[in-house]
Image (cartoon, rainbow, N blue to C red; front, side, top):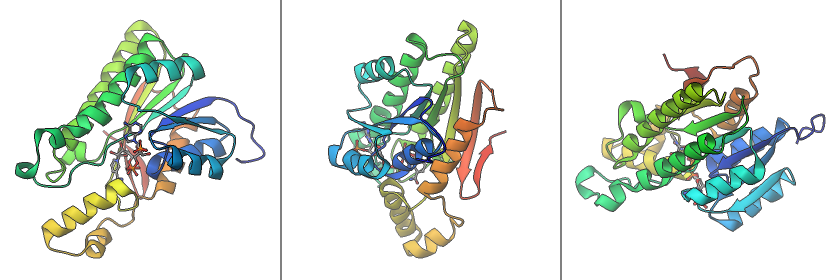
Length: 252
Ligand SMILES: NC(=O)c1ccc[n+]([C@@H]2O[C@H](COP(=O)([O-])OP(=O)(O)OC[C@H]3O[C@@H](n4cnc5c(N)ncnc54)[C@H](OP(=O)(O)O)[C@@H]3O)[C@@H](O)[C@H]2O)c1
């Protein structure tokens, strides 16, 4: 943690065991937050804890569980919530998917966003709190080798907008932002997608990856999400942002 800052507020980050989530946790801790990091794999969370120190509070739990969402919000009273957990989709074309593999991201990504967002409204976060939900660029363009992934991520966009409207109607003052990152080979989930789309195009992964330059890295994701969370001038109740190697850009 930046030694000139002291812990001010608590953030909860789901999917904090690796990839974007652990980078977001690191950037928020550097900004002075305490971060409660949720994932299912204890060893991965222990590694993050070793790297980030006492400001990172590991919680081994399934983020798709409604009771987990309610209890952790009640226990930690976060003013920042980053709903980042997501399943790695089966990267095969639609006719090679089963219904189970096709719907997997609805059961993980969307279900978790639903329970946590619902909990923020029913056990309201304090006014001014921010809920950031991780969607995907696939929600804009589709992802034909990822089953129902694009639709699940599009639903997360709708969910956050519905919640922002309910917060406004009830005068809760909770802010919602949705982030749509571009595909990157820099995480386990993204690397599987890059390999599948490169194979489909009959090119090697290096050639496919070159077309994604400048690459989105976990460090850029962490820095940009922390910037969004720390932007005290932005009091928008709802915002949507694409996230590329150039950083965040508000969607029109
Ligand atoms: N990488 C990309 O190219 C890309 C592009 C657009 C959007 N995204 C989105 O960004 C988010 C992060 O992606 P990533 O690339 O960092 O993925 P990743 O490296 O696979 O990490 C996913 C994290 O989510 C956790 N997780 C999965 N299921 C969970 C559950 N049921 N409960 C709690 N934690 C769970 C995983 O830990 P455990 O398995 O230990 O639980 C892991 O810590 C995802 O929502 C993804 O869809 C990624």
